[in-house]
Length: 241
Image (tube, rainbow, N blue to C red):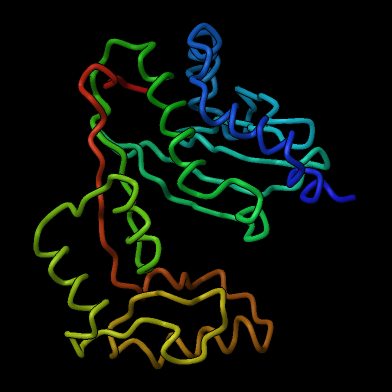
């Protein structure tokens, strides 16, 4: 029986629910603060927190420079979820979101994981009295990620972006296209592009996916239309990392 199958058992579902429902131990989080600060300039990724979710899964937090990364792993060290936050001026920006689709059928999803990660960050931030960090940010060019962010309490940084996004998803602005309306491979679904960029995007994906080229000089996200959403951190939680 695989770890995913075992996770589906009732007792493991209960253990999972208990882990994600209960608050972090504040004393443990406080003890991590100095370790996190020590690693803030380190280039190598360092584990600063690890706790078992149940007998099959671990919740792990790492620190590397301005990046705090969160992982949900099985006992074979396979990543089932991975979110990374980067400190950017007065914000913590969710710059990477990776979810193994198979985990969603077993009592956990990205929203549950995000809430736990934000809780950890706020607990860590409370250790300092420097009120520099003011909000969380999700910056994305994918319709499903933007809609997911809104469901999780984030809002558009300005009203013009909100208006534009609503027109795009409702097909009321013919200057833009959302992938999935043409064949680009599942990995690239739901990205927002200006129509003028569709040709180079198709060329990129043809080379990257179907011809196996490695194009480290090009990032597909450079072609996307991006939207910034924010969630304010309660004032008493604000602090510098």
